[in-house]
Amino acid sequence: QVQLVESGGGLVQAGGSLRLSCAASGSIFSINDMGWYRQAPGKQRELVARISSGGRTNYADSVKGRFTISRDNAKNTVYLQMNSLKPGDTAVYYCKQETPTMSGFKEWWGQGTQVTVSS
Image (cartoon, rainbow, N blue to C red; front, side, top):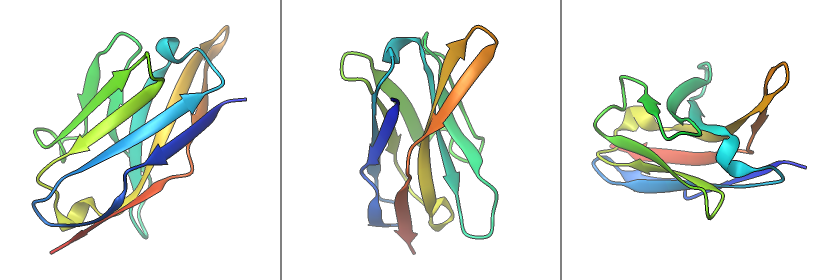
């Protein structure tokens, strides 16, 4: 059974940093594409950053140059380093796993971790 457990959220002042972690279990981590998404109150969930099984990354324009996604296959963990945080980054951050299947991809989500940036 796949499980994704996020950690590292919290309250930080504008300009500060946080590092989110997502520990995955129940599948062969190295073959999965992983992503971080966020959802602010009253808004749709949006992609923040994504890293493929091969290490290719892509970012939302709003976080480019401030956030870095990385993965450690030995630890079955994906990270999101968030620097220069802004109040607009306040949201629940979710980890997503995409596992290739015969017919496409299957996806799983973590429970989310709250990030609050005060001005």
